[in-house]
Image 1 (cartoon, rainbow, N blue to C red):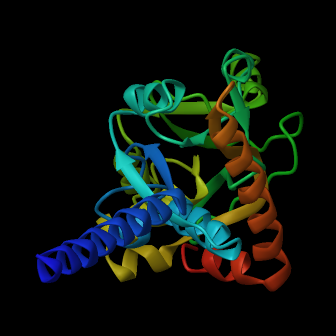
Image 2 (image 1 turned 30 degrees about the vertical axis):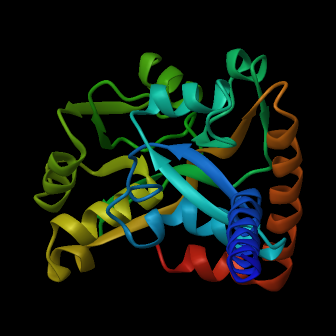
Length: 253
C-alpha cells in the first residue's frame, strides 16, 4: 500500500511539473496571426519571410519565442481582435484600425521605388519636373496619394499592365522607361521569376516614390497584447543598436 502511494505521488508530481512547464512555455511564446504577402511574410519562406524574421529576433532579445498562425488576412485580424491570438501583423496604419487596435513601433517599411533598364538610364527628383518617360504601373494599385495625383494631373505618363511580372518584362524589352513597385517585392520577384542575366540588366533609382511603415497590432483592451507590444518595441530598439536589423534587411536586397 505504501509503495503504491509513493509511486502515485511521484507520478502526480511529474505530471504537475510537466503541466506547469507547458504553461510556462506557452506564457513565453507570442502567438501572432498573419497572412500571405511574400517576401514580407509567407508560410513557405525561411523564417516565414522578412517581417517574421525581424519580429522573432526582436522578441528573442527580451526572452520571448514566437508562433505564427497563418490565415486569410481578414481572419488574421479577427483572431487578434477576439484575442485568440496575442498579436497580428503586419499592417499599415489607418484611422479606422487605430480605434480598435494598439500599434507597435515600425517593424519595417514598404517602400515604392522606380526600377529601370540600365540600357535606358532613368532619373527623377520630383513630380513637378518629372522627365518625359513612360512609367509602367499595375492595374488596380495605388502607389501613393502624391503619385496618383501626379498621374491625374498629367505630370506622369503611365501605361497600365495586368501584373507586376509583365511590367518587368516590358521594362526588359524597352517598352516602358521605368516601373514603380514595392522595393522588396520587386527584388524578390526578380530573383524568383527572372534569370541572373535579366536581373543584371535592371537597376533602381535611389529616390523613393513613397514609404509606409508596417506594424504589429494588439486589440484594444487586451492587456497581455499591450504588454507584448511594449516588449517588442524594447526588443526592436536593441536589434537596431546591435546592427542585427540592418544585417537582416541586407539579405533581402
